Every structure is written in C-alpha cells, then in structure tokens.
Image (cartoon, rainbow, N blue to C red; front, side, top):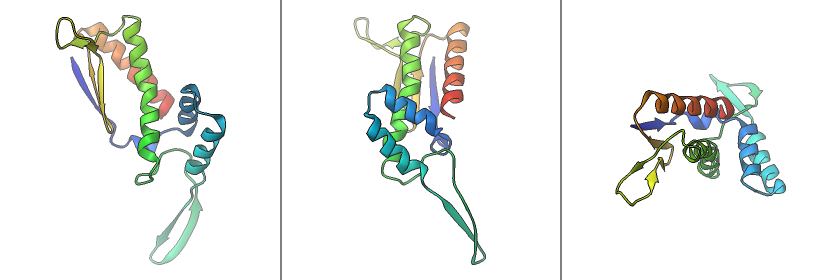
Length: 141
C-alpha cells in the first residue's frame, strides 16, 4: 500500500506543548527551546472591521505561515509522526517496501508538508497505520 498524507492545514493546528516536547526529546537545549517557544507564543492579532479596531486576541496553538522558522518547526513536529512509524517498523507492526531484493525497506518519504507511507496492504497493517495517525493527531493537534 502507499498512503499519501497531505497536511495542508497542519501549520494552523500544531499544539505548542507537542512541539516543545518533541524538541526536548530530540536533544535541543532547554534555553533554545524556551526562546523558540517565546517566538511562537507571544503573538497577538487585532482585526480591523470597516476601519474600526477590534479586540486583541492571542492564539493558543499553530505556526504562522510565512514566518521564517515555521517550515523548520513543522519538520520537527513531523519527527513525532516519523518516530511512531519507525517504532512500528522496528517492532514488526509495519513493513516497508523494497525497491530491490537486497535494498533497504522504505516505510515513508517526506516532502514539505506531504508524507507518503509505504507498507504491506493487509487489513491489520492498515489498522495499525490508522492507529498511528490517530495517536499523532491526538498529540500534535
């Protein structure tokens, strides 16, 4: 099977606590993580309606599109999904595909905000992949 995951609106839904935990688990220094979290969590918005200034509101999650760090931070978030896939492959729950007999098995490929997951097309493997995606959704937002 080949499953293409399009995470087109995922930037807007990333939970900040999830991003922080992934960065810490990846070994980033706590001071650096704190600085990054300040950069993404101190934003506020004001909407003007017909020239009148509205109320100030602050988001509680999400990465800003167009912000220079956002693509890199999104890749760090994807590491959470990739870790779940790698763990399932290591434990034998998922099986990648081989391009040649002696080549390595490929379980996933990433490009920007798209991910393609490869595996054995059985009901059990599809259910496992679905469970992985649900867990990633629950944790990351």
